[in-house]
Image 1 (tube, rainbow, N blue to C red):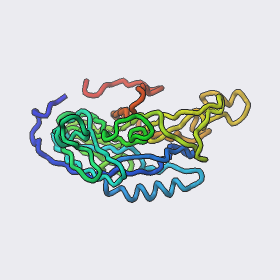
Image 2: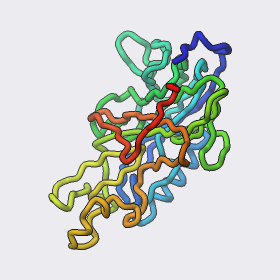
Image 3: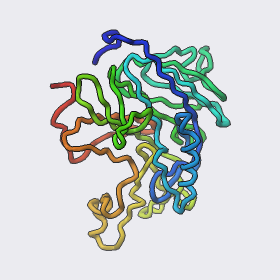
Length: 305
């Protein structure tokens, strides 16, 4: 891994203006939703996302809106990142990033000890230094509790990816340059382009079904918890066998897109032979999870040839 001091031109400044919004987040086509969803968005996208998400929520059953997803920002190694955060909600909020350098006096996103309070009920600017390549979680630290009254469980987190110097990122479907997004095609000088997939795990959500009730596991009659991937979830309670025939109860049926359609969590798409990187972020604060890609062998490791 190249260190910052080995690269020229280390003074580029990138500016982002972010907001926190509160809307119902719908997690799948069956209408499971969090009535108190929270997410970071780019200011220029805020009104559109709120309007379209509410229109989708008013359908029967409520439906997800594609742009309701964890915010992923990209910068280049060596960038200075200026994040103006505008909080219009009726609670103090912040943005705390893990793993990048910043001044704890003004950019920590916490109210801790004798340090200055860098949470806000209005507007604040944070300065981060992209001195290491990789993926870095950011989240609210004005309320660090893990309860349903706090913010993390409702989705108030995102990530910043520090790409190689000179790299550019494009929408994988339109080919246009992009400012944010879970998936991107990364083009870097002197090296092959690659597909980049950002995957967030988060857990023990406050979820209601399409009727506004706590979801129930039909096999046990007990409340059913929900774990999500990037604001989407496909719990098995929604993929019950369609008949009493034992042949309809196997995994080849319950996990089949032919029977139930594609699952709600984002699908990682590529052509054969495409280089790919999966950026895994644990956004939840209650449990740890394991990532495993079934039915595939990685025959080559990046940067080892």
